[in-house]
Length: 508
Image (cartoon, rainbow, N blue to C red; front, side, top):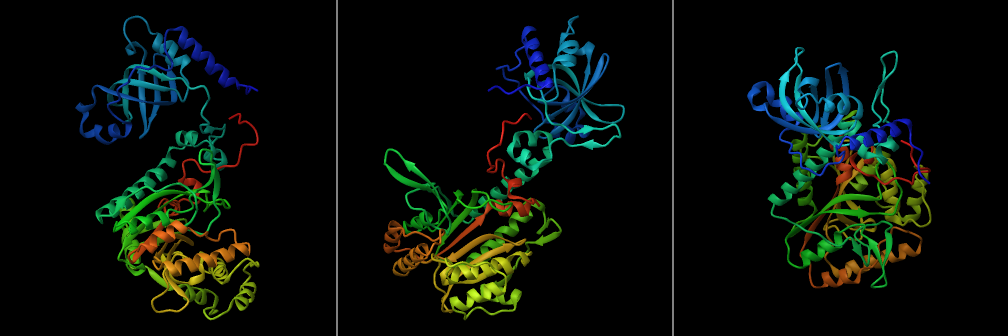
């Protein structure tokens, strides 16, 4: 069923046909050679007036004020906005003023793309502008942009602030709220800074499979699909850890990957089912060494993005300057609850969790209970970047047992602004111990733990050939981007976050 057109849409389609009737292609194929941006003009014109005598610029028409033979308009390109000045007697040549009187004044609409030829000058009120000598229609738009409107009292109302609409129609959000681009620019700067740091260390960026016959490397529920030719189930990866470790077995000393991972779990302002992380594995290193690397790398990212180690996040000023505070898992729980759980058995821990108001169920083993207590009572209070170290062995099936502390593993997480931003281990490279850990996970799965890990025979075979001592790391790019851009929701740092289906076709 065709959507009913609004009155404005009908008018735009009529204008489209009139352009065609005039012999003007509203969607031309010819190249329009842009030689300058609005940002460059505004930045350099004052000191270089002679350099902008013959410019070509393109973008969207965002406003228009017609005053008889002359008009002012605003053009928005990818770098910002700049004022245009039109004079009827100078647009095109000869007696035919169709391009001004008909096309510009009557057939162009806000949001249309045009290409402009002209020169830069300064108006009497001091505004840097472009004197238009000719223009070309590049794209006729068929829907009006939801631009801010002013009421009779002079109050401005933004027509596109609803978060669901903004996330669902990011292409419109970026046009009418161009300031949102800054978060995405900084996100790219963040990954570039991280990639530069890791490359300078000599580590190799690699790619590993997204479709996997066995999902592993984390505790999570997967998305499942089916390969028709092979007639076998496949899973979207929940992590790339086990494949990167295979490369360490194969002889690489340091490998990393920016990976899209997928977890079939709940959604919130901190969780999207499709997310990005970087994983790094370096041979002959341990988790203490990796903590130093994380501090150094994230401090560098803050400096690269902001010129300072201090970053404002909501009401908090986060300082990424090294060194960061460090607690063991048990120390953190005792610090924030006043209870030492380090020697408790599972039954006692269940009762303790209940007393603390932490929800528990029969599927939870000792490790899951500890994780829940920490998550409920400690994590939200860790605002400044903090390392939580030395986790119970039950929580970490892929981490090496602690060299000094019975029942613990050599693992750390970095917590910042109340959320985990990274996870790292001294990697378990004992194949016998690893098999036993996997088998323990199978038992948890039988108890109903849907996030328990599965046993990967090929990975076990790989480390039976020998994996050197290795440190491994995973950093959540989305979470770190939220912090570095002062964004309240993960949806604000994802161009196209996962959304529930629209209930009905949008008329917007």
